[in-house]
Image (cartoon, rainbow, N blue to C red; front, top):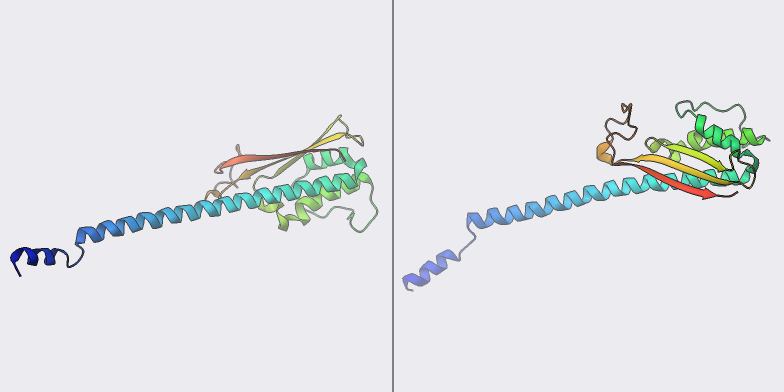
Length: 184
């Protein structure tokens, strides 16, 4: 063997340290990119779950209003005045008793927020449901509008929500709104 062949064989015997460092760096960048993609996927799944829960709660309220056609004005008042911090059982449980339209509307709002909270209401940050009618007074056959607002948040941005005084959606991605117009 001549010197030139020996020199070539020595160079092709393995990878140099620089080549190993570069390949480890490229691999690390790929793994970090995949981890970021996973994090974004989890955040999107969480936000979509909240959106699904809001749609379910809103649709449930629409169904309740359609059953209790004469309680429109009471739904408007009950939703506006409801205190989520006070989930004490109402005086009349309308799922087991005959109730007036007003009692049924009050019970439905309590049921939606408190008894069904395991299905979504308590898991949705800064949930606010507004009910309005046109014409005002919510006469049977009136056009009704339900507007549901909540704070879309990722799993990473839950800190500070309990202490936000001025902005209910502080430390969240954005305030979301879902509107549904209907006629019972």
